[in-house]
Amino acid sequence: MQKPLLPPNEAARLTNLTDHYILDTPSEAVFDNITTLAAKICDTPYAFIALLDSRRQWFKSTYGMDVHESDREDSFCGHAILGEDIMEVPDASQDPRFHDNPFVESDFHARFYAGKPIQSAEGHALGTLCVMDRKPRQLEPEQTEAINALAQLVETLLKTRRQEARSAWLGSVLDAMSEEVALFDMDSLRYIYANANALEELDIDLEALKEATPVDVMPELDRETLEVLLRPLRQGEKEVVVSEQLRRRKNGLLYPVEIRLQVIRTAVPVFASVVRDISERKAIERAQRDLLSTVSHELRTPLGSIDGALTVITSGMAGPVPDPIAEMASLAQRNSQRLVRLVTEFLDLEKAELGKVDFKLKPLNLAEVLNEAVSTNQGFALKHEVDLKLGEIPQVEVLADQDRLQQVLTNLLSNAIKFSPERKAVRVEAQRLNEDHSDGNRVRISVIDQGPGIPEEFRPYLFEKFSQSPGSDAQNGKTKGPGTGLGLALVKAYVEGMQGQVHFDSQVHVGTTFHVDLPMK
Image (cartoon, rainbow, N blue to C red):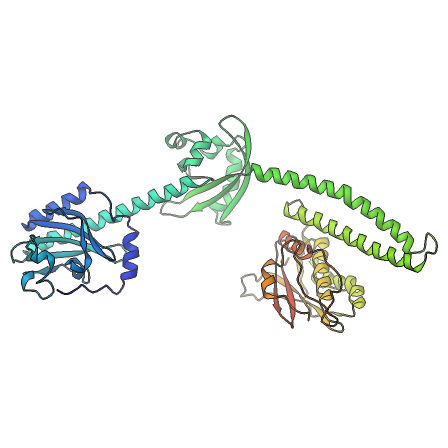
C-alpha cells in the first residue's frame, strides 16, 4: 500500500478547511440526499462525502456504510485530492497503491473507487465525493457527468455553510461586546441589525427595531442633526464620525454616550454605529475639572505670593540681608518658580487633554515666529554657554495659534539648550515638505541639538507626562536644570491641537532633532 502524498499547499488547505466550520458537525439531510443520489446513479453499494484533515478522513455523509472516520494514510481520497478531475480505480486489488488497503481486505471488499475532489472557493481540495463498489468496473459517461454535478453541489453547500457559520460566529462576537453595535440603511436610516447589548439597552426586539431609526432612540437627536453627522461619510470626506449624545435607559434616566459612525462598504453599503456608555468618563472629566479649579486656586495663588515676597528680599527692596540669607532666599525663589512652572504646565496640559483649550488658528509669518522664539530664548542659551542659531527659513505662512506655538518652541529650545554641551550649537531650521510627500501642504520646523541623544529604551515614553530623559551635561555630568517632565507632553498636546504632528530623530552621543509639522496657509 502506498501512503498518499501531501498536497504542496497542505498548510493553507488545512487552514481553509478549518475556516469552513464543517468538521465534526452532525449529519444533515441535504448531504445525505447527495450521497444517496450518487450511489443510485452509479449503482454502487457505497457513497460518501469525505473531508481530509491532517490525520484522518472524516465523513460528512455516508451511504451503505456506518463509519464516521478513518486514517488518512489508508484513504483512497488522500490520493484523489492531489488532482482536479475524478480519480477512478477500476480494480483496487490489482492497483499497487491499494491492493493491501484495509478497505480492500476488510468486509468492505472494495474493488472499484471513483472520487471527485471538492474544491473551496480559494481552490483548495477539501475532500471528495466518492462512490465505491465490491466488483471491478468503470463509470459510464453519464455517471461521470452526474458525479461532477453533485460535487459542484457539495461545493456550493459548503460555501453557503461557511458564510452562515461566519455570520453566526461574527454575531456571537458582536453579542459579546460591551458596546452597542448596529447597522442601518443609508437611505431610509432604518435599522437592519443590532447586537444583543443594543437590544438590551433599548429594551426592544430586532424586528421592532427594524421599524425605527437612530432618531427614534435618541431623545435629543433630530433628523437634520443626524444628516449633518452623516454627510461627511456619504461624501467620503471622513472615514469615521464621532459624536456625543444622550440616551434614555429603560427606567427613563438619560445617560451620555459616544457614537462612532462609519460606512461599511459591502455589496450594499450600510451605516454602522458603535455606541459606548461614557458615564464613567464624564465623571472622571468632572473630577479633573474640579481638580484643575482646586489646584489653580489653592496652589498657584499662594505660590505667586511667595515668589513675590522672595523677589522683594533678593532684590534688596526690603533692605540689605546677610549673604547666607540672600543665598537661601535665592534658592527658595528658584524652587518656588519651578513649582509655579510645574503647576502652570500641569493645568495647561490637563486643559489640552480635556479639549478645553481654544486654539485660535490664523496665518502666521513663519520667519517672524522663529525669529521671536530664538530671540526670547537667547538669554537662556547664553547663560548655559550654548550657541543658539537660526537656519534657513522659507517665506511661508503657517496656520497656528501664536501663543501656543511660541510655548511649543520655547519648550523644545529649552530642552535642547539644557542637554547640549557648552560651546555647542542648537539650530532652528524649517523647510516646506516636498510636493510628492503625503503632507505636501505642510511645513516642518526642526530644533536640532548636539546633546547626548535619547536612550533607545526611553523613546516610547518620551511624550508621556512626568517622563524625563536621563541625559546629562556632556562636560560635567550634571543636568543644567531640573525639568517638570511635562514639557514634551504639552508640546504634543498643543501641536496636535493645531492640526500638526511632532516627532523626533535621535542618535546617542550625537544629538536629537525634534520636528514639528504644521499646515501652511
